[in-house]
Amino acid sequence: MSLPANPAAQPMTHREVLRALSGLLIVLFAAMISSTVVSVALPQIVGDLKGSQSQYTWVVTAMLLASTASTPIWGKLADLFPKKRLLQIAIVIFSLASLGCGLVQNTEQLIALRVVQGLGMGALQVLVQVIIGAMVSPKERGRYNGYLGGVMAVSTVGGPLLGGAITDADWLGWQWCFFMAVPLTLIALVMLTRTLHLVETRRPETKVDYAGASLIAAGVSLLLLWVTFVDAEFAWISWQTAAMVGGSVVLLGAAVWVETRVSEPVVPIHVVKRRDPALAIVASLSVGMAMFGGAVFLGQYFQIARGYSPTEAGLLTIPLMFGVLVSSAVAGRMVSRSGRVKPYIVAGTMVLTGGFLMLSAVDHETSLVYMGVGMLAVGIGVGAAMQNLVLVVQNSVPLRELGAASGSITFFRSLGGTIGVSVLGAVLANQVASKIAEGLAALGIPVEGATGGSSLDIGSMPAPVREVVMAAYGDATGHLFLLSACISAAGVVAALFLTPVRLRDSVDLPEPEKEPAESTAAV
Image 1 (cartoon, rainbow, N blue to C red):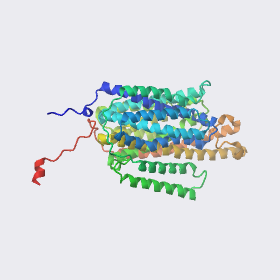
Image 2: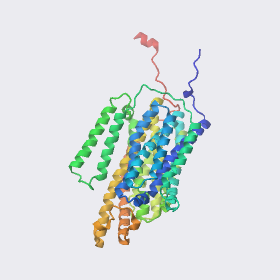
Image 3: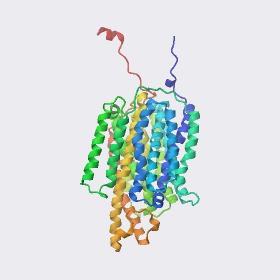
Image 4: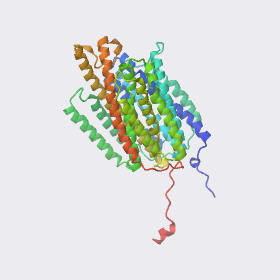
């Protein structure tokens, strides 16, 4: 008697995939636009809430850190429990947190709720990739990753523009930068409930490695806290530095020890230590550090250093987002057509590094045309490299490990972004404070009484102080892009050592061939 065909083994048609993909793209769009809408409005948000430059950085870092710490857990849960149910839970978490962010009264509340929002963001990012990976083969996935890249680009192009318009509109206010995510996610929830139908394989006997995830989150958080406060609250060589850095090393060392001994690690060491996944992770880490760390301060540069409105700042970032849109779509289709991914990753990381090198020369008077070319190069590099690095890892694992592997690559990319924002934010704060002190001293204004070193409420400052602060932010931003170029150069090196393999056509890895029974019996 012949066995019935396994439904999970039957590839979905292009039409079926597109129907399911529509809901996934709306989910991703809602998550991405909620971040980009807020990015251009952050200077006014933090200014209205009377926050400081350090708090500005942590409004971004808190969400990235929570997303980073939770990503591998969501990835592992996707291997154990129904992916559709997990996605629905993540949508609810994200929606409620977005609603709460619009109701905050101070920066401390905003940072706390951004942590919760980050939990939902981490889930949405990895689950969308996992679900797509469960539907189509790695080679065909390039085409659909092009759609993902397009949605990411549209959200990042439209987000700053929409955020600027919302912030500038007196009848709306910056609170709607958070509120607008709620109806989008509710629409996505309804669509996914109706269109997403996966054949799930549950493994209830396995366990989630909460200990490893907690140790990783604690170790990274402690290290980022040290980066934020060192040289401002305490010296580089001090007992606080020893305690925080030493504690972080101990926690991360314990996490590695746990991950090598548990049966279901949250970050699968056997996958991470393979050549191509390891190189892809290094490249993704550097791209994440450079992209998130450098781009997050562009809105601040245009508004504080150049004096543009939030809407104008959003318009000025269009070259960056346009580069991502075109590059991700073109590279995705070319990868699906050829089955080769390495050339596009290498080219992308090189262009990314070149773009940041151009932007490293900016100051408070740099030509906007020159900046536009640099931002376009950065966008092209990110679009060609970021999503294709995920394919390298997914191509090397069987379907049963797809969630953990996707969670790992997304984890390290988010970790890179978190570290990048935190490190570059600390560098910017120190550079700005130093330049403001020098500028005020030259004017004969006491630094203590000027309040220019910490406040982002530029409009309330006296004209001479405002000019000093604007020049300080403009001149200090170039240092951030130079650091970003050095970081992304590490991604170029990692990409060059990738194996030039072809992406497989099957959703799952083929089963290894068993030895013939006769040979076994002869032995």
